[in-house]
Length: 112
Length: 109
Image (cartoon, rainbow over all chains, first blue to last red; front, side, top):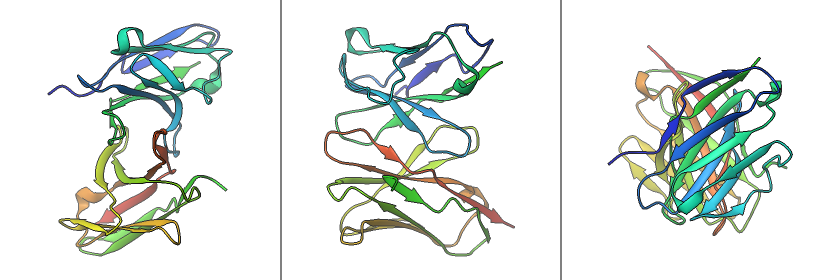
């Protein structure tokens, strides 16, 4: 069974440019998470979806970040415009309801 | 107080040693508890769930103390391959998983 798939794996952009990350969760998983992880820190939640509905987005910086999960399957996270401080690993995870979450390999973003 | 707190380490132990990590959580209504393992530059992976009665998986033992709001992970007979960061994870009902910062373990030959 395929795991959570994220792309791209790495992205280098100049500040003020837009960037988008894509995630395809495990088939059948209704819950999808986007986490941000800085070096030496644990993952921090940005947004959680239950099917196509964003049910927890209080930590998402809405002035520059947006996300969507059309049709309740794959999801896109966008940053526009990117800032230097956005450099981090962006992790997507999925779960079936309240069960444990499975993570994708992440997208390592570097803003220069 | 952070929701989930862990000693960041690093814990440097020789092969064959027993090592224990503790984690405290602030929300007394928390219901689910997990330990995840994260290798350098990799994604977190579930190591084990933590049950109220405590549970064991090979060399790994997890304990939960609800009264004191802490979770522990014990690793016996440490292997070089156990070197990683161990993340304590907590959630309450239908809420997102909350991660600690992780505890770094280095097992030395």
